[in-house]
Image (cartoon, rainbow, N blue to C red; front, side, top):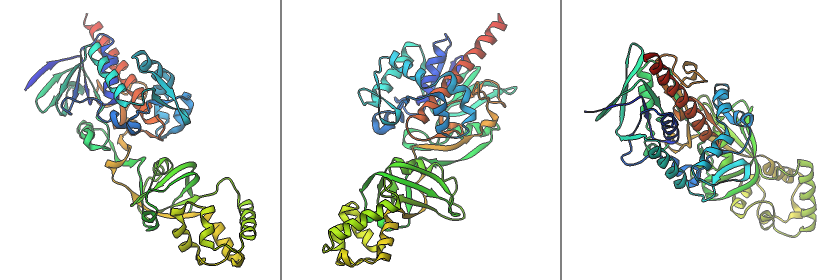
Length: 423
């Protein structure tokens, strides 16, 4: 067993772990970062934003908090002290040129997540962080305070430990729930992990028929089994062989907290720019202008060609019927379908396909200003291990940066205060 002396041990070399390590080491402390992926830090960071790394969102602190779905109040202090503007300055100071795109999303100008990872790895070297590749198994305590971090082959004696092990999404990157086990072993309540920002499975065979079709500028509304809308927004979505995906669907999934007791229903407004009256007037004009055209040949004027067979089946109008023969009732059914195209959701895709994991360490047992455990002195949490999650758009990484900064500063202050008393 290899033994190392440190002031602070950071467990997990992802976004939160690397930032927390560097920020603590910048304050002159001995920091050891334990990462389970041999030779890799920032493995999950490399694939965020489809490999482009959506670092944060160029918006106000208030807007960040509004985008946090679970425990946003818990994040007020951390985001206020290290918000989007601070994150942008921090990465630009490391030589990463940034740009802001639609929706306030911030990316490196290079569009390469690898540039962000390499900048952070340089920071670790510059600040003297020692990186140890080993799988952490437990945090050892003495008198309800952190004493050491125990790995399979390494033991790090330390006065503070920061758990940054992530959730259970993308397990190939090392996020397999180890942190949950360690936190629970120390008495922390765990909110059961569930997928958030995840594609959805649908019972409708039409999704497979339209596989690969991307809808733009549509309104998506998700309703629970009682018909109550739990989410609605404009944007883009995608049909797949199992159901639906895309930005709108991922955001909607975050509001689907439980599939017990019934399905959720998705309603797609294919023509959100037109209300029912205006859309009906357009149909009347078209039917009059193209009266001798077959209904099936006219439909591509209204929907993508990939949707035509599905619309024909659902609306019940024969494809060879002339437009001037379509009845008022049939036109009303077409109008309803265009404004309320429904899909039955049977559940989310597996958690390992989720962008983030909801659930984790119960934040009621964590100080929101320091990220320190209320049960174990010297134990801190940062990133996805906490029961905090947000919409897409850079907000989940912002949570990682803000909590990592809070934990690093508090852990460093703890060590420095202890050393001061010792003197």
